[in-house]
Image (cartoon, rainbow, N blue to C red; front, side, top):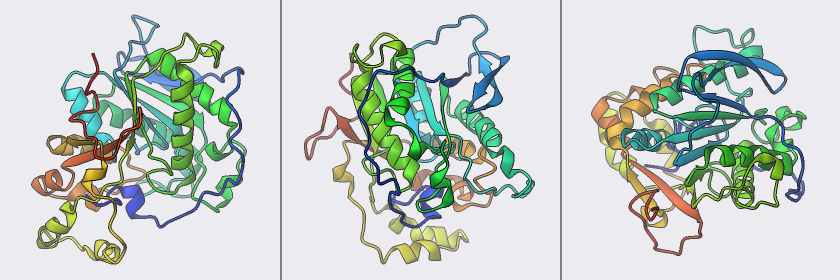
Length: 348
């Protein structure tokens, strides 16, 4: 599929990184409390989330979280369902416990739900999107959901970049510490996150990659953030790979025959093609889970219109269009041409 084959990238153009700041060093400091959600019971309790109160699902029988094998760290609510939705459903179907970390509340997203008022409902967009990501993760079979608690930074060069709580303005050691605490709590063997530079050049996608790299390196170091729990070193770290495998070009006549206006994609054809499948470490066959991915995307009602191309394709076309998810191994670094059959390849 093409590099822009997620709803967020398809409706946006290129933007730069507005930060222009030094990242700072990892240090020993107190972590802020991390908001978390689990799907193992229906017990309800209120907790603090970025200065507001939300309701979370909590364990009724055991206060300690069970480990996950795979943890996806994504910038915004709905990112878990786009380029990693098929992957999460794939592993859930194989009884692999998965977790998701969402770094921001998605406050700068548009409101596309026709039943909502884009002005009146904006003040509660964080609350709405938190519930949407809970619903989506249930559909994808995700066992553990954690909200890192930062604010959506918005597109580059917009006023939201200046908000003091924006993810892009977070003290890097503080953000890493929050994620280290989650990694040490959930003890994943594999982490999946943004590629270098982000899945596209949105400030939060870029920051998500940087913070995840920091946390991956620090989580196994007993001297880093000792207050965040006993050290735990995940085995592998992957980024979502930006791959253009030509599938959508081949499917173009079928898209048009099915009644879809593909002019938006034809305009993209004048751009240079993205990297090919040979650049990915893992090519995961997730076509059988395109329906779960579609339903998870639709759970994000504020962001995904029901008539969106990404959720309204006929089932067979959708399966073919979203057949493969690609990932590149970031740690241990892969060598050119190295390929693995699975994200869990080589684990005991």
